[in-house]
Length: 190
Image (cartoon, rainbow, N blue to C red; front, side, top):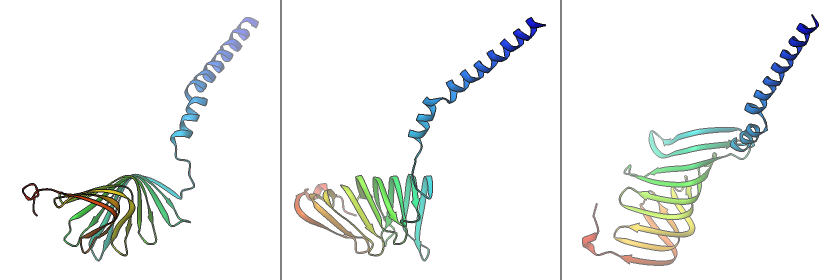
């Protein structure tokens, strides 16, 4: 009887140590640390992945937002985004697409601020690169105080700052402007 009891206790102890070993191997400190670093620890009221939002006015699409992820902060009236693409629609429906690493939208005014590797393009008409950009929803204007490199309309322009009036389809380079004009045979007309 003592031998059976000793064998039974040994088996129970072996099972307990096996279960503990499996638990430590699969759920121990290593994975806990990875989960902490992989998860977004934030004070956001909401976190969303694969975002697609469209702003319309009287049934007409004004702008569209896509992002790989975003967070909403109710107290700050702000949403932040990663891998952001904002498309603003001109009066004729043609798109002006703004792409950047990250951005913010003020939820009350619908103004957009973008940062990091900004590329703005209007189809095959023009394109410019900069490091930050703002879009005023009320004024329907895109602008930046940063350096820009613009190509389109038979020109290559470098300068500091740009302001684009969306509805009038006009743009102004604000400072330190240098322009290269291409020969007319290289320019495609709309």
